[in-house]
Amino acid sequence: MARGMWDRFWRWYERRYLLNVAVASGLFLLQLVHLYWLAADPIATRLSGASFFDPSGAVQYAILVVDYTEIPALMAVSLVYVNELRAGFAWRPLLFLAFLNSQWLHIFWITDQYVSNELAGRAAVSSLPGWLAWVAILIDYLELPVIYDTFRRAAAALSARMSAPGSRWSVARPR
Image 1: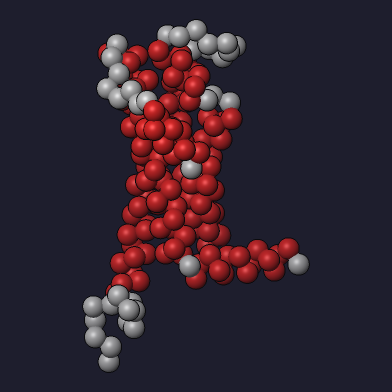
Image 2: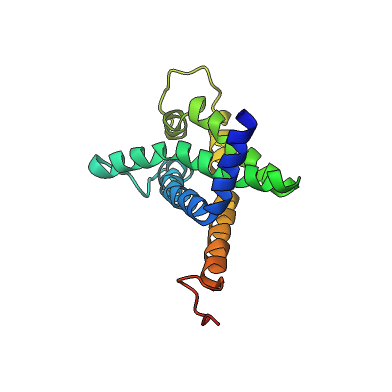
C-alpha cells in the first residue's frame, strides 16, 4: 500500500515537474536575500569592521520571514534530486543532496543568531567554538551551486514545455 502511494506521488511529481522545479527555484530565489544579508552584514562587519547592510524594522522582519522559507526550499529541492536518483545513480545529485541537507545542521544547531553574534564579537551564551560560525557560513554558501542548478533545470523544463508540439506556448505551428 505504501509503495503504491509513493509510486502515485512520483508519477504526479513527474507530470508536474515544471511546476515543482519552478516552485523550488522561487523558494531558492528568496534564499539569495539571506545570503546577501549574511555577506553584507555579519561577514562584512567581521572582515572590514563595517556593515554594508544593517536592516531594521520591516526589512529585518522580511528577512526573518525569508529565512523561514529555507525549510520548504530544502524539501522542494531535495525532491528534485531524489527524483533524479530514482532514475539511476549519479554523483552530482547525491553531492547536491549532501550540500542541501547539511543546512539542517545549520538551521537547528549553528543558528544565524550565533553566527551574527560570533562574527560581530558579541559575547554569546554558547559552548560552541568561534570557528563553527565560519563552518555555518560555508554550509549556507554550499546552496549556491544547487541554486544555480535548480534555476538551470527550471529554465530547461520551461524551454522544453514551450517548444513541445501542441503546447499553448509553442511557437511552432501545429500540423
